[in-house]
Image (cartoon, rainbow, N blue to C red; front, side, top):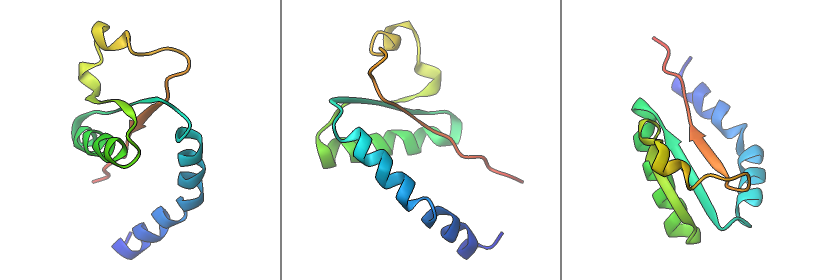
Length: 88
């Protein structure tokens, strides 16, 4: 797939991302995590959320989701998992 085709695929998700943003804007906290090469994206993504809309929460590496981090989680906490696959 050419890079221009990949950009077109991402732009098709624009409406879905807008709908997701509308759901999350009313929330007080957010947990965002990723694993491996996705962890840096999750950390940076949370920093952007924190700076733009001043939402508290955490961006963490999935491997660090231990018992002490689980205390943050309840049924009302939005959790965003950054996941993309790299095909060889």
